[in-house]
Image (cartoon, rainbow, N blue to C red):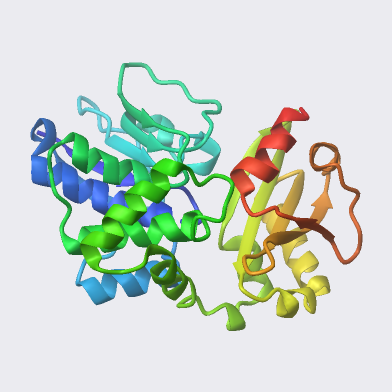
Length: 313
């Protein structure tokens, strides 16, 4: 028997946290392959995740910084990756671990393993949609608490099903979970979203709270997203945000950085760029401007920002 660490990506969002927590619970309920499964995280919890877990009486995931090399004669640490698979977005020292499994809804990039593993990867709107489906596959009914945690992340990750990443499957799973809880999924999702203290976010938080590293044309490009129901405050902070972008880029030794200020009510994003972003500008078909570039309809970093940038490689 081994203890398997389960965790999402760096700078975790609600989907990374809840997929980790509920997947760990499911695997422990099943006593899957005789192992135990520990929910972990690679950074501070988002405000909505912390509140949901506290209200539900569910322990927060254990914060980890790195995977250390195994002691001589010992087996490497087993891990499951949720909501990501690219090493640049994962834990430091991932190469010291054995990847036991992946549950993800993103592209696969720079991902190799030495041995076969469990992979459940589907082009759905949320990793929690996949975890919810695993309950059905395994013949387990989620508890009301598990259903609430899963639905919260499905709604925040698909922007209440408005994102182009949302599928009919996500909508069907959300409807089923909503029926179990006696809530309207979209209204519930908006309530969860509004627990974010967006009115008090600093420029540094807007830049660094939800950001991922990508390898693009031999360069390291950071792509971040700040979601809000009213972008006006952020637009009044553009000089401070740009300064925070440059500082974060330098801290992470990246070549360039893209930030999407996404207004879910207006259904679009103000896009800011700093550093070497030629490929990003080519992929998005924009030219940087001091105040940023408004891109109507752009809600998904994965499908509408990262994907065209990577395709422009």
